Structures are given as structure tokens and as C-alpha cells.
Length: 451
Ligand code: SF4
Image (tube, rainbow, N blue to C red; front, side):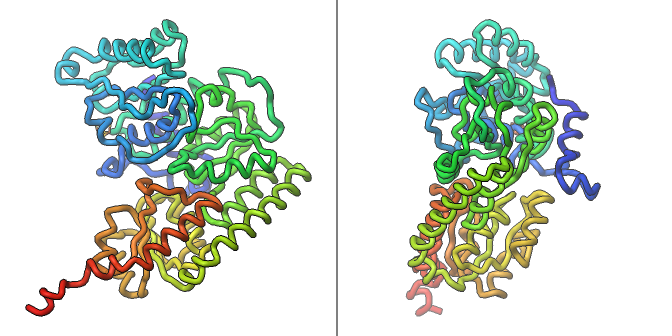
């Protein structure tokens, strides 16, 4: 069903968000220009794209697909055909705007269902197809019966709001069409769902083997390394674990109401937060043996990590950093940096939710509202050694002759959990010791001699 005002209002006033509980303010309402940081369609596609056994079909002019294409590396261990290597678009044209794009959509679904053998097809509505009023639900229902696979229409056209809202709408679509539609072969006593974990650069694979060693079973993930077959049975997990991003909190609240599954929110960045995340998961089960095993493994992992970090600590101790990234990373990466001996002077909250801002205050003394105006000034004032940000901030680092590390989703290496912290320490050390940042920003000798 087409997304309506009531549904958007419910998602923006999510009662499970603490700032809404306190009636301080509602979640990010669409503001002018909000989609320049990614539209709702992009947010929905990012949330579901890691399902590599499904085909993701964008019902739109091909430019919509281009806007969100290959923005993050979300690896999958799926051994069938990985359907995320190809982009699928109905390529709506001016002709379709006038005469409707229903036939094109039907033909596209038919082609995918007969040639690609997907476990499901996600069909994304976008601005153009929402405005011309194509009857996507009707087509999807008919095709679903014809081909016997779920066809999930995701109603998150870009104009409804931000990326965050789009992720929420994707969660609604999965809850309505997939979760609770099949029963598992067995119900694990310590089964969990990982919600909002996208396995960017394989972050999730840093900690799921540890959870398994303790005796926790990951029933399903939404959607990192996810499988459609598992998400059908997500209602039989005993706990929902929201990993960092809270955009799917509405889904968790509704699963609690519908299936009685409680939820917790954790972060797997840094040593302290990874250990605390494991403890939070285990303590939710109130099982003494599980807790004992968890403590044993945490102690082993922390000890092994500390010895691996020793050579990096010597180089990083006392170094000062500024962090300019989005969402929960404004505090979770700060915590990880502190764990390797770096002083985090300031963090940007320009793209953080109200909840993330509250948490960031507990980790970092200065919160940057406008990086473009404040970042460079703070680097000078606090004698900062390193800037950790997205690629666009590289030029600020070069101008200021300080080291730079890309910590946004374009990064190539995982910084998740204990193993990822070692990767982060290695990358920061390499940047701090790399003379290129000082040299590139310095005038060439011939320029100096002519001055
Ligand atoms: S859905 Fe709308 S805002 Fe998003 S990329 Fe397409 S046209 Fe642009």
C-alpha cells in the first residue's frame, strides 16, 4: 500500500525513541534539502540491499539507481548467484510518465522471476513512479501468485524524506511481508536477530564467530549477509539486537508487541563497547552458564587484542583527533579511538540523530554542528594530529598538513569489534607516519625560491 501521512507520522514520532518519550522533539522530520544527504529511496535500498539472494528492482528512471549505486561494500557469504552485483531498473521514460509504467514493471518482474531464480524480489517505488501512480501492489500480488516467490513493494519514494526515514519504511515492508511467514525447523534457546547490521566491509563477521563460540545463534540479520529464508523465521528469535543504527527501532518495537521479542541496542566498535555489547546480549538471557562462558571468552579476546595493539599504542598514545562522520559513528568510532589511546577533541553531529547526539556528549567534549565552518579552526586551536572523516574532508587535512583516515562507508577495511580495532590502529598509525600529508600541503622548493 502506498505510504501515507499517518504512517510517516508514526515513524517520525516513534514512541520507543527516548527523545520522543520525553516529548522533547520528534525524529528527523523532512526539511528542505534533506534528500541531498540521500533520499528515502536510497535509505530503503541501503537497508535491504545486503540480501544477496533477492533481486532489488528499482521502478524508476535509471538515474535513481545510479544515485545509490555501489555506495557501500556489504559482502555476503551466499553461495548462489549474488544478485547485488547487477543493478535492476525498469528505466521509466517520458513515454511511461504519460502512459504509465505498469506493463514495464510486470515485464521486468517476469524476466527476473524466470531468469534469475531469486528467493524474493524487492521492488522500490521512487518519486516518479509514486507521482504517476503505477499500481505496484496489484502487479506484485499477481506476480507473487504466478511465480511463488515473495515480491515486496517498498514504498519509500525519495520525496517523503531522509535516508533514515527510508530505512524505517524498508523495515515496515519486511515486517509486513516476510517476518513470521514460515516456521523454523528448530527454535534455539539463545537465538538472536541482528537488526540494522549491514555487514559493511564485513564488520559483522568480526563478532559473529565470537557470539557462536559463547553459544548464541544468529537466527537472521536485517540485512547484512542476510537470507530471505532466515528472515521469514525471525519471529522465533528470543532477542532483537539493534546494532548501532536505530533507524529500525520501530520494527523492533512492533516485533516486541506482535511476537513478544524484547530488544536491546549495542555497538560493536572498540574494545569496551564490543565487550559491553556481548555482556548485554548474554545478560538478556539470564543464564549463568552463558554469562560465565561469555566472560571467559571476553577475557581471552581482550588479552589477545592488547598484545596485538602494543606496537601501535606506542605510536598513538597522546595523539589528538577530530572525527567527522555520520549517525552513530559520531560516538562509536570516538569510543574505538579512545580505546587505542587517542584523545578525541571533537566529533561532528551534523548527520547524527537526537539520540546519537545525547550519547556523543558522553564520549567527546566538543560537538561540531557545522564541520565546514568549525573543523579547520578546531584543528589549529587544539593542535590536532589526525582527521577521521569521509573522503570530502581529505582536502581539509591536506591544507592543515595533518594525517587523514577515511572512516565512512567507502572505507575498504572493517573496523568492527576486536579484530577491527586492530585494523583501525594499523590504519591510523600508517596515516600518522605517512609524510605525504605534510609534504603535499607544503609549497614546492621552486615556489619558495621565487617568493
Ligand atoms: S527517488 Fe526521488 S529523490 Fe531519490 S534518487 Fe530518485 S528521483 Fe531522486
